[in-house]
Length: 296
Image (tube, rainbow, N blue to C red; front, top):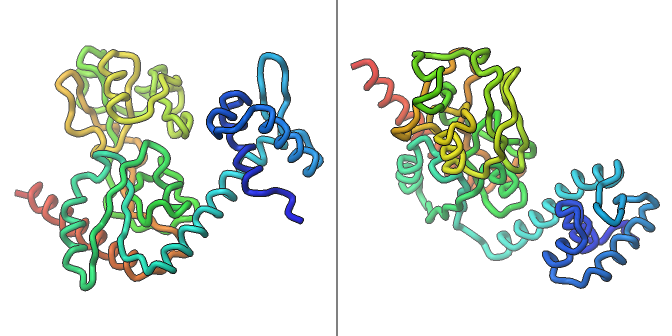
């Protein structure tokens, strides 16, 4: 008999993410006693304690932390398998692209036009994701391809092709002492507050920077920068167009970022391969036009 059922894993993940049995039960639309009983049954079956419970809080044990990471991947794999079977059975021909709003570096219209010229191409559905969930939506099969920014997004379990490599810039208020400079270095950001992306934590920040407010998307981040509560270090395409209250300065020694088209590593469907080829060719054409424009 399996040590865990899918429903038990869903119950565990809800409690692990909420760290509150009442909120988790509400999220799952079940009674709290039934949820508590299911979690205790799972702990008994595994022979480990997953949560430390007190009258004030619920926390994960080391065993619970381990199951949280692996459980998300396992549940995602189950969902991906179901979607793959459904697509194969239905002969699905519609491709779904997930991206963050404005996260295409002005390449999307050219990519869609190039894809439309591919023999047998069908309509591309566009899904808008948050700052950190786009790769996971491909891993679970909710989307077929994604536009991701590396090294910020996690490409584990995905193949990808690079569309654009670009510099990173600092976004800061016009009233900030650094705003009068023409360019910055990473060391100039030491002691400055940088935002934390919800779901990804505070990753990729330069040495000496301080954790700033937690943000969920670009507009929220821009608002915090305008208020003077944080600076932002971004790929250039995500910083433009620049709000009139802000300035955008190149950070000359920051590692460059890449905009990539990503898909599940075992997905060999012709409609995915055709879209990827069209995306790479379109991006190369746009970059060529931009380079010729800079030379004029």
